[in-house]
Image 1 (cartoon, helix red, strand yellow):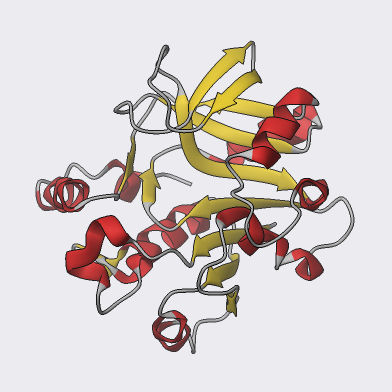
Image 2 (image 1 turned 30 degrees about the vertical axis):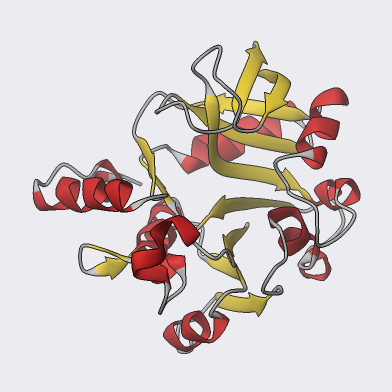
Length: 233
């Protein structure tokens, strides 16, 4: 199963780091965060990667130039998340399932179980829901199906979008062009058609949005408390 990692954003909230390099190349410990994310997937046997690049794409392309099964595809400098995914459509067959994540979130969830959950429910999209600080898209979940999706609203409950997804290639029918954010119209349409499922993850998840987030992740590594490094396949 292929893994798409969205690597094209500007990373403006990490401006101290991203003036010279793209956000996925910001180091957490001795490795760029993109390496940490790739290794999480590899733990569960997923080793065929498509990196949807944009801002400072040449740096990523050079870094992965000699890495097998890691394909860097330029998806435009200002393309939004849905648009980046749409530009990859030709790389997927009809009804093909694949994984997707952003290049800034670390987790200790069992991705094999997420895939199994997705295949069992036979819907177009599955996201992993987590319970960290209230800064992201709020989900209302009934059973395991997403009832409503609101991006970056004041939270009324504590399940949020954790940014690890499994999609069927039918997802492309919900994206119209470069200026579409995956987390807005497509997810709202998927929700309305009862095609967005939520896999509840109760363990570790942390994004790297700010320098504070980055320093937290580095501290976890230094203290040997980094859950994503202790995954068992």
